[in-house]
Image (cartoon, rainbow, N blue to C red; front, side):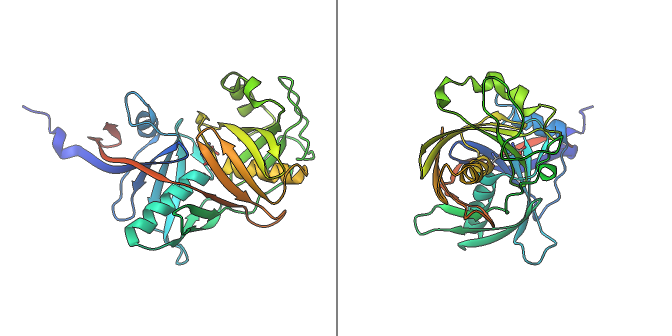
Length: 288
Ligand SMILES: N[C@H](CCC[C@H](N)C(=O)O)C(=O)O
């Protein structure tokens, strides 16, 4: 007798999007309860056996009346990401397109995020105010987050910033001379960072521009990291290396970041749809 496979089969529609090549599988659960576990997430993240993504973006209906939806992010290794700037911009674009509106509010783990569509189509999001106390990064020991006492691989002391997720930013003279895939894992998992950290390497270009590459917690080196771009500008403003408006040049393109030295960080940049599809399988163990 045939196995009653189809009866148990779950079908999960998804949309693939990216912001500067930082890519996402977006699952909209606002109208339908869809359940999946960490094994499912890592399987879908697999770029050969699955769809492939840096972060999975999950949209849920929000209990908060001020928010149009609730947003959560999972890294490709299955871990939770407290914030994701490019994923926020992509989800905001998707929700705005669905309702033909140009402004949206999203409830996230780091607070309420507001996003707007600008006249040129770029999406601008107000990220949360950066947290700068060592406990809030979090770091393993009390220290000045402007000079975290960590000296490795010939790098200077990093600046630590929490953008809803932990970041350490190293300023370097020559970004191209660094073997980031080789040094990234050690830094991401250094005992100084009890919740691991996103590791940014920034090279100052001018008072209004910097180049950045980020080895992301739970995802490795990506083409762009939105919260990393915010963290790098916050770090550079604190070190008086750039002004309050700064272009961040990432491998996948450019983000405009603005931070007045206090309050929220604003991030503006492009978003793009790649394709849509259907994840198909039994229960939580979905065959792609
Ligand atoms: N790509 C994301 C960052 C994901 C952060 C994640 N790697 C973590 O904090 O664990 C961004 O655009 O901000």
